[in-house]
Length: 392
Image 1 (cartoon, rainbow, N blue to C red):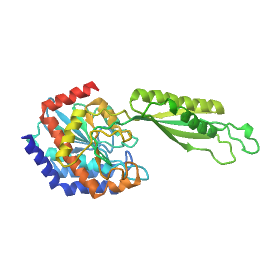
Image 2 (image 1 turned 90 degrees about the horizontal axis):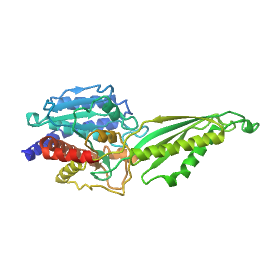
Image 3 (image 1 turned 135 degrees about the vertical axis):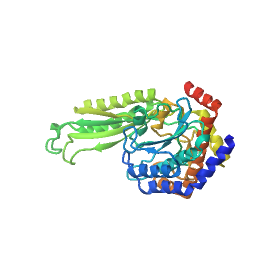
Image 4 (image 1 turned 90 degrees about the vertical axis):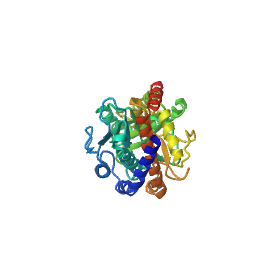
C-alpha cells in the first residue's frame, strides 16, 4: 500500500513539474528580502490552490508574508507533519542560498500529499516561513503558536553535495556603538576621545581571545560607522559582530568574551559604549531516524547522499529553533558539482536556476513527500523519531 502511494506522489510531482519549475524560476527572477516576500507568497498560494483543494491562509501568525495550508485528517489524535518553505533572498545577491528551490520543492511535496485525499492517514501542513536570512521568521511563528499540534517538521536546503545530517551553529548579532568627543585631528588631537580607536581596539581584542574559543566557534565583524572625516577625531563609531557556536551554552560564553572586549576598548579610549543584541538562532538537533528515512528515499530516487561530511563548514538557520521544539530534519541537496560553489556566492545564484538545480529540487520534493507519508503512515517510525528527539 505505502509503496503504491509513493508512486502516486512521484507521478503527481512529475505531472505538475512545469508549474513547480515555473514557481522556482519566478521567485529566483524576483528576489525579495526578509519580510518583503509578497510576490513569492502570492505565487506559492496560486500553485497550491490551483494544484490541490487546500486553501492557503495568508497572512499567517502575524507575519504578512507567512502562509499556511493543510490537508489530510482533521482530528486531534491524527499524526501531523509540516513541510517548511523559505523564499527570502540575500541583499545585493539574490537567491544565493537557493530559497527559491526550497519554496517550490516544499510546495510540490505538499500538493502531492494533498492529492492522496482520504488515503492520507494524518495531516500535512505547508508553512511558508519568511526571513530566514537574519529575520528569524520561524521563531516568530513558533512563538505565535503556529507549530502547536505538529509532530515533526522537515525541509531541505540546496548545497554542493547531498548530506543527510549536518550541524548548524547557534548564533546572535552584537552591535557596539561608541560615543566619544570630536576634535581637530591636527590642531588639537589631545582634546578628542576617539570612538574609532575603540572600534579598532575591539577587533584587536576579539582576535586576541580566539585562542580561547572552542572548535566550531565563529566570530566575525565589520565596521558600520567609522567617523566623519580624516581630519576629525571620530566622536561616533560602530561595529557589528556575528557570534556563532556549536551549541547555545558555548554561544553565551563567547558572547560574554566579545562584550568584554568592547567594554575594555571603550575604557581604554575613554568613550561611552552602547551594546545592542539581535537574537539569532539555536543550533540544529537533527532527527536521525527521520533523516535516514529521507536518505533511503533519495537513494531509491537515484541519489547517493552522504550521511554526514566533516569536511564541510556550518552556518546558522532558524530551523535550529524548530528542531528544539519538535523532531526536525534539514538535509542538504546538491544543485552543483562538489566544490564548484557554495551558499552566499554569486555562482550559487546561477545554480539555483540551473537545470541541475531544478532537477535536484524535484528529487528533494519527492523525497520529502515520501518521508512525510511514511511518518504519517508508520507508527513504528514515529516512535523511533520521537525517541531519538527526546534523547537529544
